[in-house]
Length: 105
Image (cartoon, rainbow, N blue to C red):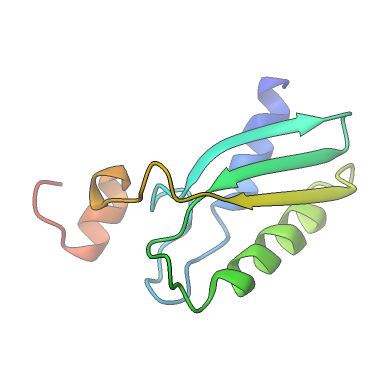
């Protein structure tokens, strides 16, 4: 994937906020992998903070609408939620740790 397109995708994903936590999904460390298929389909491999996340559907919907809004060339957004490796606080960026008051930031 071109670096410019990858940067645009990650920039857009930084606008998708986990509604329970109030931090974007990139800085939370929820996004594991982003790939572009056929130039118009984005595939995102990610996790949630917990298996029973009640807002997973909303987060996925927000990802799809945000990417389509910010990058008109994208025709399809496929989100694959995985549980391995499991999410831990260590996956968060320094910004997210400071914002949430996590020790060791």
